Amino acid sequence: MLGFLIAGAAAGGAAVWAGGCSGDEPPGPSSDSTSRVTRLDAPTATATASAAAAAEVRDAGAAPAPTAVPDDKPYSGPLLGAMALQTPVYPTPDFSKDRIGYIRLGGKVPVDPTPIKGTSCPKGWYRLLDGGYVCGKYSTLDVQSPQVRLGITAPNLDDVLPYKYAYNTAHGTPLYKSVPSKEDMMRYEPYLAEAKEKKKKRDEEGAGGGGAVPSSESNAAPPAQAASVASPDTAVPPAGDDQSASAVAAAAALGLGDAGVEPPPEPPKPWWQQKQEKGKSLEVKLSDLESDADGTVAKRMVKGFFVAVDKTFGWNNRLWYKTTAGLVAPSDRMYIAKGPASQGIEVPDGVTQVGFITATKAAKFEIDTEKKEVKTVGSVPRFSAFGLTGATTSVKTIIYRQTTEGWWMKAIDGTYTDPGARPADLAPGEKWVDVNLTRKTLLAFDGDKPYYAALVSPGKRSKKKDKDHSTPTGMFRIREKHITVTMDGDGAVAGDLPYSIEDVPYVAYYDRSYALHGAFWHSNFGREMSHGCVNLSPLDAKKIFFWTEPRLPRGWHAVWATDKNRGTLVVIHD
Image: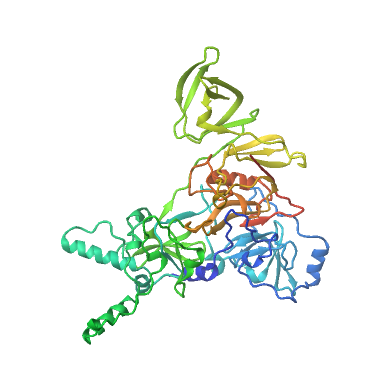
């Protein structure tokens, strides 16, 4: 019954590369850290020669650039299933650092079913119809095989977010490698026993039992009830404290207590059970989260971590989440986050400037520009987007901007697009993206024609160097795109807690670890919020992700730009 969990954990127990919107170099063709890109075995040093058929393909040139097939042409031919966490796609039927993308475990892609035999991949190479080659060692034509069928659930590209995301509400929540037994739960989650004991005591006192954390004996609370979780700060001492108590009892029995014999010191409590003194922050790093990892627990989470939910299931009277990394989390310590549904607009014909409301309360105004009289004619919701005529007026030192709908917006209630100059090396009609850090806006262009406008949240600026997360300015090309990728990192300064967001949606890297990507954990677009990346609402990020180059082929989870398939130009300026 739980075979899918074991298979998932075995395939995905280690998270894929995580980038945290900093200057760190990400993996892939532009990095030496290729071992972090995939969990596949590295090819042997002698596996460089290919069979004659493969050599002929290489001599004829690399595989065509990956292409996306229009949705109105449904495909019904042979499919290739991915059997590795990240099944790499190469430009030629040979192993190399020059990967052009990958397919996620369980993904299915259109394929030429005739294998190309070669010594570098004894099971043969398969040519993908949208470009690239995959080794048969990590893929199969049998898409009903357990490794494919029980792989990671495909992202939902029709919803606001590709997955459901669960927020961890307390320090120390374990991520299990497989479903735990009742004994394991009590061992690794001592707060369950304490909550059960408190409930029993309240029941005995006639005080009722509301608000206790569900134990392994109780019915699981749905994610929405996670706010009732008891704090880990009040957890019972870990196993081992009984030994100290036994030593004290033994000393007392022997009459040694008065002789000054001290019991053995209690072992230090793990970071997640330590009480935080007022004014002092918890000192913990990502490496500490695996301090008690063993055959049952992979790691523990810090409050504020997010996991992407692959499947939800019941076990031992609790509700559990299987994450897309193949680990298992108790849902009663978490709740499902709801992503913001705000979005920008496709720029209407003839409009060159777009305005946005960022204030929580704003109004529409009618202005008699000659008499300088202002009249309120309605309200306008936060994050509304609309065309601007470019006309402005000032009444009693307050600046107003005229919309193409005829009403006026108060300048301090929002912002507006203000792109820089068109890049000089842009090809005629080529797409490009302008990001204005001062205005907190993004404007996508088809050549000289504005196409789509959105609010962004760039990096937080600070005069203190260790707290400055400014988004770097410059001109870049999108290097690689991932439907989702995990981002994590340690705090920038002492006292900052580490962060981890599993499967951040619609990520387009353009410079080192800096990317355009969706953010579902806040809805403060139009304000500085990030560690340096350019945050967009999930719907805006998805729009830009699928509009920009390189295009993502059918079934792929990520794609890299190449010399023949260059990424879209991104210009970031103040």
